[in-house]
Length: 129
Image (cartoon, rainbow, N blue to C red; front, side, top):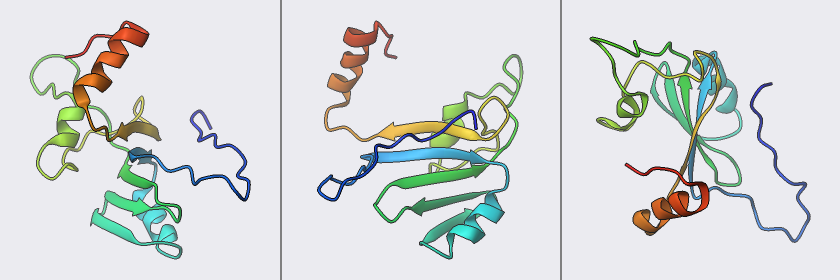
């Protein structure tokens, strides 16, 4: 695929590779994926197009049915992440990676958001808004 998870081969004494936060995935068939995953782990279904699952080692994945992005100009323009973060955190009908499946986001929980934001400015020359 165009997007993949690359994890180091685990040795017996290695700590688990757990993200302190979550990963957002856009899937071509969320219902089918949720049904398959229910055989192995707890799946929290939000509706037919969205679910959350925690893998056996503890990583949290928020999974969404691929939906085309809203218009980028004019009436109806909605920032993608605004849709994600309104209401219960899972609202919005426009969710995809270049209008297809893929890794949509990685959310890191940090103790000091301002310090974390400043590191992007210092290390990468990024802008923080």
